[in-house]
Image 1 (spheres, rainbow, N blue to C red):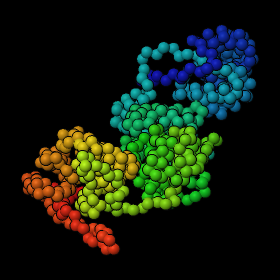
Image 2: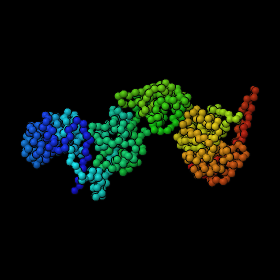
Image 3: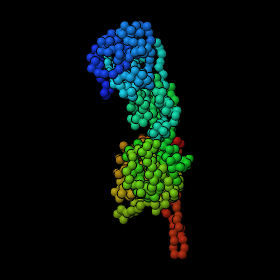
Length: 566
């Protein structure tokens, strides 16, 4: 046979612990009040030594002839015998304690399998105290999980856990759907973050604190003593939820997913507004530049958390010239102390807010321009040794960015960034990607930082130094723009293609020497497709009462790639 070891319960405050039945009798002899005995009929031979045994003790035993005979032999009256088959719920235990007017409930530490939690909760409700008889040492035996595993291996069967993944809404129970509440109520074990468990845990329920999907899945697959697991997640399971990462780890389980009320829907209902036109962003544990979205859209909803709190967001908005936007901040939504604060970014910047909060940002003057080619005057300019720091002009920049064919998630290098005009526009286009602006001139680096702040492009990293030396440890690029090489053109190309053989490169040249270098690289490296165009831009210039066209230097734009995947 297999000896199954039950897991001991946690220490209960205000309970009396005794090592054996005789010790329980010794203790109870010095007390008053009725006793509900739940240790079974085998212990009656020793329990009957208790003073006023037949008057004080009510025994709960199995409905079997042998159990009833033991009760009669011990001297119990029929009115003091409760012959019933378990398991017994908390409500049933509570009813028995009230029926017997018991001041004491005697039980063994049978753990969860012995119904210990239900007895404990019922005793606390009824105002009775527990007398807990500790289990004798058990050196041989295995846990329930190990027992199930052993039997499955022996009989060639498998246990498929049933897992419910639920969204509990903003946190308050009143904001939870009835379906989710019933799922939680019927679950054997709840899993989730401490904050979530605290919001939903019912008396007597088993819970496991875990956040990472790997930890959650590992717990489910190694704890066969539970048949129905419920993973509790905040908000809605489809709205910036951990469910997306968790579900692939539960392929071997039977899984059901239950939606919840999102914080977006909840806040908008409180504000009496719709949300079909709202752009959503999460800054909770994410490094994401929200400014372009807020600048371009009339309404943006933001999930906040950690260092990205509302105070930091308001300051960032003010730095970007968006201090006028209206913000509705939601804190502890659905809880009794729920709070919604409204005002402009400038007005709210100095306030104190919950770290975990949400905000609806409304911009009355959205700038929805989606094309590249910002005006040259948009950028901060400067001088170094009486020479203007180079800047790729608007028209040339626009064509170069078109040739680059960036995606939202591109990883870009801008080599010889100058004032950063191309790098800035790269960062605005690749808003979910990252841009690295490489520049060696001190004055240009200062301008780069100023322009980065001016356009609030957090996904732009300024890299001081000369390429390719300072580029070797940068992330693998998908796209590169070369505006200056300091004579290291071939070395730069070698590094780019070593990092990513399918990279898309766009480079500009004005001098004959640079044109020659780029032509040589175009022929020397294994590009499947290349293109060279020459552009000459003429712009009007006022001369007295007239406007004359003034020509600029012709510029060559080289585009090189291996495969057409960008």
